[in-house]
Each structure stands twice: as C-alpha cells, then as structure tokens.
Amino acid sequence: MPEESVPADNDKGLSSTPMGKFAQWAGLPAADRNATRPGYFPWDAWESRARGVGLADELAALGGIVIRDAYQHGWPVELRTRCGWADDGDEMLALALAAPAQAGDEWERLLEADGSEGGSE
Image (cartoon, rainbow, N blue to C red; front, side):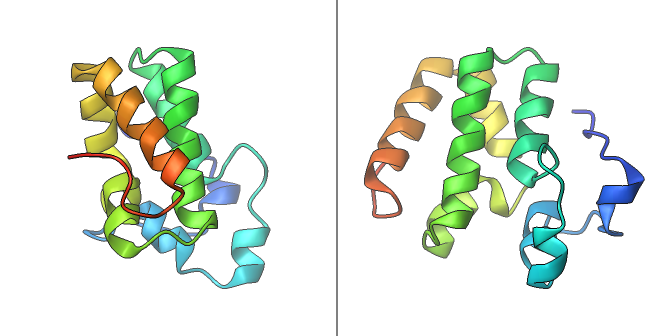
C-alpha cells in the first residue's frame, strides 16, 4: 500500500518506525502538535489515503473521525491501537476495503461508546 505524502514543512522529521507516525506525532511536545496545520493531522492523512485507494468518502470520513476521537478523547491504549495508532491505520483500511459494512458498523459502535468497550472484533 503506498504511503501518503505529507509536505516536508509539516512532517516534523517523523520517520517510519514500528510505533508508527501517528504515535510519534502524539508523542511530540504540545506546541509542535498544536502547530499542525488543519488538514495535516494523522486522521486527515488517513482519510486522504483511504480515499486515494478507493474507499467511499463517507466511510473514509468516518474512519478519520474514529482515529481523531480515539486520540482526542483519550481512549484506552487497547482501543487506540485498534483505531490506527499503532499501525497508522493500516488494519482499519484493510478492513474497510475488504468489508466496508462491517467496518462502518464497528466504527459507529466505537464512536457511540466513546472509549468504553464498544465495537466488536
């Protein structure tokens, strides 16, 4: 799967590691995270990447919201991992491409539960 290109002036020197760029971004000092321009947050990059490989706009947007809320609402580590923060959303994207209805249902449940043990495996 091709990696989404992020402009150099917004990259902040993040490199690909087993932790993933999403998690690296989350570990930056608050001032650096807050300096991220709208449209270049990890959830924006995932949504753009998802659309680029053919995911429907509505499902791509929903996945981006799940990734954003997992971070912004402080979901437990297990759920953040399930929501793309360990692998830059690769598993979420694979599920959405293979089984869009299942992905949409699971992501809706996760959002409704807002960080509790909603959603299913």
